[in-house]
Length: 319
Image (cartoon, rainbow, N blue to C red):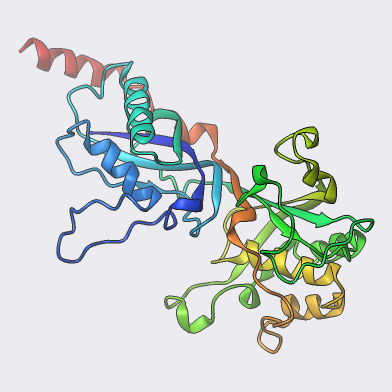
């Protein structure tokens, strides 16, 4: 039995989120509509002796993308000691995803110690939220999100806002309130929906708002010229359910003068009496990308056998 770390990318538009649905009548039934489920289906094609269970590091919602997510899996297979086995798995899994028309790609597979855990060993996670704000010089009679002009290259890859009222200085000021150890109770699901003992306290290491770039050069699509792109990047060890999308929603509301800076501070400093502000609408999932899950390099190194263990192993083979 050997444990492997998988790093992979995916477009979440056609997945029902990362976490698989368990069929209570047939617990071994596959779930190709989830990232976790289709990873397990691909691994089972190598016919391991055990039933592989993929443990994901980050359970992104439906519609959220990942430039790099990670997971671990334990495999009992005759070839696990072969040096080229990870490369063979990577090739086989990507070939399967291509044939299955799954928007998922394995970036790397490596053997790791049995003590490694994709979720609990993670030191931090970094998310990117992409915004496109209508330029002040443009005028669109946008009734709703479906009537604004969106470049096709950005479809379901960015959140487009057809309102040029966007104060970046206020956004950065509001973002500074999130930094550090805070209670994000107001930025996630109600307490009644959490398991007993669940904490909504999280430490945000960094949150930045910088000018972004379109995915395709504007010379190929003039609609890109209608917008200014902004990247919101946030890093922490872990996040509450929908926390990132709700933080972004509050930043957008602040930028458009729907919520005052003092109201944001109260949501963080006194969430018991200042819950979610209804003037902010949770940002859509398609603008969100998980870009990195970081680990301590030492946690990925398999300890070398001691001389005594090696000697015993050689003797057992000779006997």
